[in-house]
Image (tube, rainbow, N blue to C red):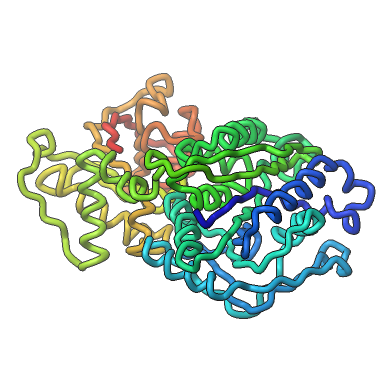
Length: 451
């Protein structure tokens, strides 16, 4: 194993005395833990370090990798230009990483000039260096790719180290929740402390599956910036037993700062997740969702409309269908029909899947590389029925349709954040361009939802 160890580090500039002054010592435990981590990593006999920052250039479609011979930066943005750093890039390892990522279908974008070390690197490096950390580096930033792809990027780090026969350590920079208390930068949310507690449990247990199974919407509520770098870090140890140690955790400013050390043990085939993750969506998807995904693939990759033979009897009838696409928990497209427009449900799914991927006016068309990253759901609608009062509505059980003349708005049931009939109707009115006080006809409907 050529990846000898790794660490998760926080990056608050305030922990640097030249920036934070007396306030810096409110995170004394973090400072001491970073020095201890620096000592451990420097004692591993590594020849290079892969550094992952969430505050460098960040892209949706590719992992940015900085290919500049020298990397320089300081904390001048935070009032301490005298605190400066200069690192050397291990260009051979960087090029091997680009190639290994390509084999694993993880797109990488090279940054060849103009990058200066950001505080995601400089703030923790201040303390890591005091522990003796001093290595050539490969520096990359996170991306808004799927978590599966980010994990596979970590696998690519290991493969690149093996190819170059380079002893490597990996350092992922990231703070946890920014919503731990009312004085936190983004205010308080109960998801904040809950998220931090769960991350500490996952790291302590070295549980990569649990990490990849977190709810993206919940993580977003927590206001974190360390989850994606942590996933990339865990990927570097794929297929190996992993010993972890939490060196410190604190959150005096309403932001969670976790310092953790990771060290691989022996090979463990049961911990090899990369190949499993590549095929996971299809194996777990229902029939209609598989049809939707295949329809999108056929249209985007070959310009063809999917043809399906031997349609299951339960889907041979006609019905309205909605196809919803999400990426990292965020809506990426949703198109549907209230009533049937195709000969059967399967054809309805094919038509609306293509439309959701290419014709939703709220979004850019889906790129073929995104298909693997999409979470797809299919709602088959039952016949709508008129409603006389709000008491007949239940946002978890029923969708709603509002009609005023030629204007019609629809909202599916069981949508996150929609908890009352009043909210449901208000959103449906807005979608139709119907004012809050205009008279409307109201209908409710049930759906069968397929994942």
